[in-house]
Image 1: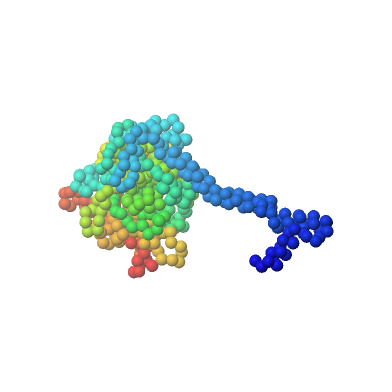
Image 2: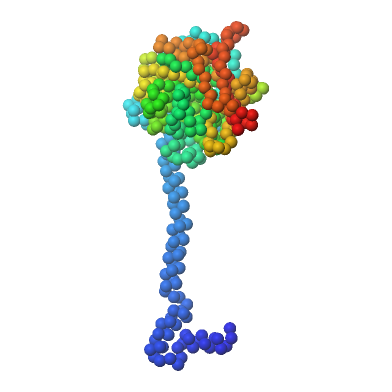
Length: 453
């Protein structure tokens, strides 16, 4: 700085040569321009610092609150176990005392006593039990790591990551409510859900089928592919539909991987407010220490290689009215039951049974169709070893007996056969080992240039 400029600045700050009034004015100005700690500047800096602290802390507080809400939800779902088994697939299976399981938190089950297994399973005139011994059975991965003691139920532990993948806490473990735009029997046609199903309409008290197990590829993070049976009663166009569902599904959003997993679902009001997957809400009462709903299934079928399948039976106990689920062979495969108290129409009987596959296409309209696979990812015409199948379709009658479903009593439906299709057939017991009876192949690759753009 030049000397003359410095002198001028000193004159300005000192007020030399000015009157006393001017000196006082200048003294006030000097305190503002020359002070090393101006009060307003300090206040402004403090306010800015405070704002920075608040803005910086807000996401931290919000995240902490979010974690607290998630943890409270997990505490409701995950009941304390007497033993925990760490499976090779990353799951943790908790062995929860039977009388302390999540199902009993349902208000309709406040005074419910866990039922003992029915004295008699549905009688069968078929050769399914012998066929089961001849087929390759798919089981559960966690069995290689341990077992749960008697008096407990095996429950897959839900993690914070599982909850955080959901679209919202309210929707976690639940199907989105959907209305069917088609005069079709399926309960969730529309909103991107596509199917290849077989169905029969009659007064029934249960159903059984053997289902091949695959690991289809999922195109979107919130997509899924499943193969299941539905036990249905009520109105398809109203809000009183009752549905009991069981099968296998691949759902990265729900489970965080691409493994096929045993699942259950139920609703008594057309998916509006009741029901959920597995044990993610109160309702389905487990009785098994050997089978964990939501646990991964292994081994799985491969194209041109070994075919693995599983048998599911759902039926109504004629004495107490509960709907039981069996996975695999006989009474040893009993998983648990849906209490009669949960339902309206199904407290009596079912009016329709469906078997088949379902995927969800989350791609926006006008874009390419999802490449999520159904079944094996191959079309029905490719047959055994390449296409997925349901075999030995049976229903339970009022006398608690299983009967094969006649082929002409089975209808089929696929919304877009160029993406996923279905073909039914009948196989007699010509070779003495037990035929497949009424059965079908189904599935497909989804998006493909030839028939599903």
